[in-house]
Each structure stands twice: as structure tokens, then as C-alpha cells.
Length: 382
Image 1 (tube, rainbow, N blue to C red):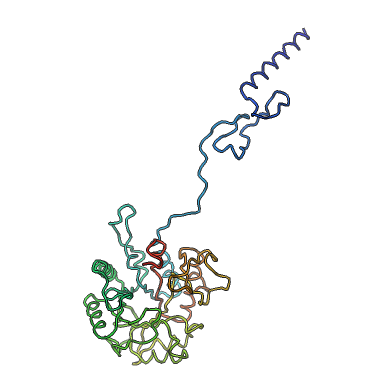
Image 2 (image 1 turned 135 degrees about the horizontal axis):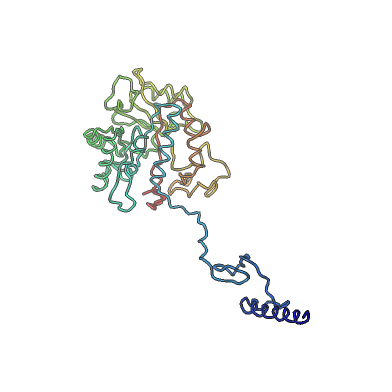
């Protein structure tokens, strides 16, 4: 009986081994070490086994593997710029509630396009609430062709957006390009008719280093103190104060005018304007107060600015992009990146905090139309 039992057990083992070898054959080329296949449950797959799983040693087709993760995120560049400006305004007003925020250009940011139907739009209310003022550029005479109006369709659209801003409580000023009484009077007449405040210059804003030749005294000159943007009847921009010589000479020269608002660069050469110089700028010749705003570019980084480090270049830091066409010392920036945003605003080491600490009444935000570059609107946003 014991012999028969051993015989039956051996026969049963042979049958099991045969069944297992039929159901789970050894991989081709595998060495047979005893007629059995090691049984593994969900064993790791090899490099060539993608799309398959091992179940009890047998490779079978499983569910499709998910696509590899991607670092590319589709961003709404206009919305990113809106959020950037909103964050700047919010930070500034936590330190000084009446700090004014004035934007240069960016008229398209005033409305949000519908994601499905771009012919539809809605007001960008949070963005507009962040702004106190807006300088609409080239409404009547363009920078590229001074003394020449923009194409009719473009002009109608720009004026419509500027009027929309005004209806939403934003003080609208215009900056046009031309020279002589003909251009100045024409632009001023068109602006006044719509309730805008006009300035006409014969050079690009970045090169504005002198007071207007005409008129020698500002239109709407008045002796009252100006402490709010809705009181401003005239303004001037001096983006480069170096031609005036020493900073005190510059401050006194500006003090000798009766403009209601003065927009200046934060820096006089390599050094920021002193608190004393800023305080001098705040008073008109007649002795009453006016607003003084500091120009700050949030859409590009220049290698001559205080924050630029010697080892910076395109791609390092990651938010530094290609040099601007026609100005290789200035780079496009990925303005939505945390590193750039923190450099501009957000702590006591930021550009904006320095402006607040120097005593400026507000900030004039330049570079808002940087979003056009990343939308593919041209090398430099046009």
C-alpha cells in the first residue's frame, strides 16, 4: 500500500508539472532547471514589457500606461499679468493704503476674452479695481510714426477701451508722440473732449529727459494742492534725470514747475533718488503739493539695474528670457514666475518696497504688454 501510494503521488506530481508547463511555459531561451517556472505575482516588468503585467509569472497585456508627466502648462498670459498687477497693488496698499497704482498701456487687460468665443468679453473687474490710473499710449499719434494717428479700426478700439476704463473709475491720461503746437493741440483737444489728460512728447518714453518745449507751462496749471488722481489736470514724465546733473539740481528744476503730477525713474544714474529729493519733487513752484510717481518696469529685466548679477544670462535665472530686439541690454522675463514676482514685490527686499520706503506717492507700472511677446504677437510685443 505504501509503494502504491508513493507511485500515485509521483504520478500526480508528474501530471501537475505537465499541466503547469503547458499553462505557463518558460520564456524562450530560458534555461530549464527542473521543468518548473518560478511563480511571481505582479513581478516588475522589464524595459521591453511596457503595456504588460506579469500575473503568476506569465506576461499578459494590462491597461495602457499613463502618458509621462509634462512640465508644460498652458497659461493665460493676460490673466497672469492681471494677477501680477493685482498682487503689486495689494502689497503696496498693505504698507500705504493711499498708494497709487498707474498702468502704462495694457488696454486689452481691461476685458477678459471668452475661452470659447473670442468675440465675447467681460470686464476684468478685479484688475480695474487694482488701478487708480491708466496712461493710454498712442491713441492719437503713434510712437513709431510721430504725428501720425494709428489705423482707424485700432484707434476706435483703443479709444473705446480707454473710455471703458474711465467709466469704471480709472483716471485716464494719454501719451502721444509728435512735436510742435499742431500735434500738441490736436491730441489735447481729442483727449479733453473725452475727459482724458494729455501729454505729447517728441521722443520715446524711455528717453524722455526734458520738459516739453511746448507748452512752456502746463495746460490747466493751477495753484491748488493735488492729493488724488482725479484732481490731476496735467502731468509730465522724466524717465532719465541724468542730463540735469546732480540729483539736487534735478529735484530743484522739477520743483520750479507747476505740474500736478510728475513721473520719474526711481534711479538717478546708478543710485536711487534720496528721500530728500523725492520730498522736494512733491511741491510745485507755487508751494502746494502734487503727486510724484516712480516708474517701475515689471515686464523686462535690464543688465544695468541694481538687481542684475554678473552670472545672470538667458535661462539663468529661469525667468530671464531672450534679449529684446533693438535693446540687447534688456531681457524679456517670464513675469509669472515666482522668482521675478518676488524681486518686484512681496517683501522688504523688493523693488516696490524700496519705492514705498523712498516716499513716492505711487508707482507707474511699465512693461504690462510683455504678455504679447509670449502670445506670439511679435518679438517685442507688437
